Length: 187
Image 1 (cartoon, rainbow, N blue to C red):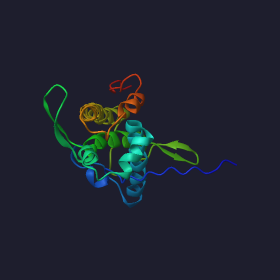
Image 2: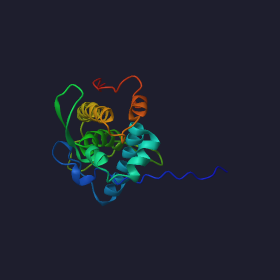
Image 3: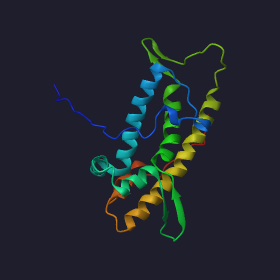
Image 4: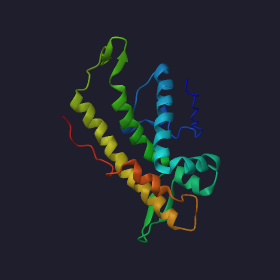
């Protein structure tokens, strides 16, 4: 037998179902609220680990009240390396299109005992596969734009005197080795 490995995901969810309104509106019920929270916990953990690596993630988790981490979480106005004023809007701003597109991608098919099925609903017209992908891809592409905004924020802050974001770039580059892909091919 292999020993049980406990992975702690201590950072509270940055987004919850109440954040998904307007263009990111998601409809859930009591059962799927819990499922959604679990989904967010795992996706958020994976994304933050990919951004920071385990060591920096643990520093963030342990020292999340630090002004530098709060600026990353809540957003901040800063001067970028080219001397322009930028407004980083925070991790919730980054997470919303990411979680939304990942949820759409994962939630349209259900695994059941007899195989994989697509749910049908009464009094509703199901979106076509093309419409679903188009909708999800638009939100993914918003995430891509925000991903680079976050990178610019961290790169600028890492160049300052702050040592809070040291070596984030080592892990950041490995997340999307060939660059982050904009999704546009809908078949």
